[in-house]
Picture 1 (cartoon, helix red, strand yellow):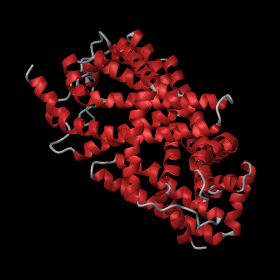
Picture 2: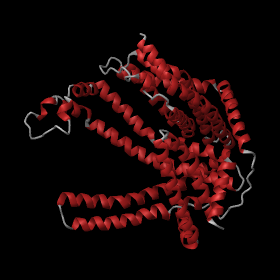
Picture 3: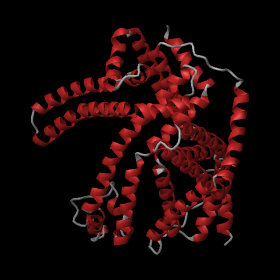
Picture 4: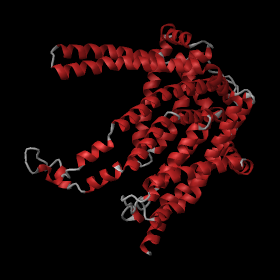
Length: 506
């Protein structure tokens, strides 16, 4: 079979069976969001320590006293005895009060924990997505296959993720050590070590990236463990070199297309489109193509209802599901509101009474430009992706959902604590009265998913209930997409003018 046939199979799957694929890739965003949790928790603890000790306020006061000309790279002369006169003598002490051993240890611990959690989350998400893709290629239920994949194959995929990470680490560490030896000891043999470690590192890196490229597909298609998957994935390179060569060309083309689209969207001021297209278009298409190639499958039983009808039906069903979820799950939605309120209270307790006034931007009416279409698109997409991550974060017993609510609540409360109340409400209220309830509903959906996940993990609910819950969350998010578009339009086009009218008339 030709590479073109495998490409068509991947494209057909994404176009004709989106309800079997997109919920699972959104689920993957929720899983990957878990990696942020340790860093956010560490950041919250650091903020609490610094604010309670007064270190942050002292640093802000010292920085405010700095003469800008004293640190201007164009005029600063270290040899001049008076060069440091514009720098407050207490700045160094204020910096040392901020970067204490406790703060540094918390930061490093958060980063390390995030790295470990991220590797595990990436493995579990790969188990879900590749299981869904292979099942959908065969005409099966992709969402149900994702649930089974997470339950039955997560160990193999997590082990594969650690193997890949370990290989990349082995590829990088010798180069870093060689550069360090060369710079510190100025040894001529250092250059030879750098060249040798660079050669070995590239070889190991290629093994991690290309040699394991089909290991995940092998685990799913051949139903083997991690070592069997690695062995069979490597076997494809030697047994079907033409197919592997075709994959390399396609992978390079996809990278080129991705980079080109990112550049175009960036120039147009809608860079968030890349954040939407990457996980929901390019990644599932690539996975579907690779899975079809490995499985040597191109003919799949896929229904072909009219695309326009499917889009209208999907969003109409999303609006109905959104209304039904608000009506049928009040406790989950109120719980989201309560957690957010707790975050607001925490943020407010940190900044209330501090001397860091925030008066809002100058020329508020023109903050986004005269015709901010790009801002409108970016805000709408970003808010929806945040909501999707929080909603599907319920699969990890709701931990990412809770942390997201607390973090955003603390951010809102912290900003309110240093703001003129009228400025704050003028900048937030016009779109916030729509956007915040939408966030609460998305997080309420995450809490509902967490409840079902806990029941399934304890054996008190069948896996089918989890499949139903995942599809419900997906439909609710489709309905919320319309709400976020409305909120994004208000924030980009109306909020600046409303805020300007309110603040200039006070």
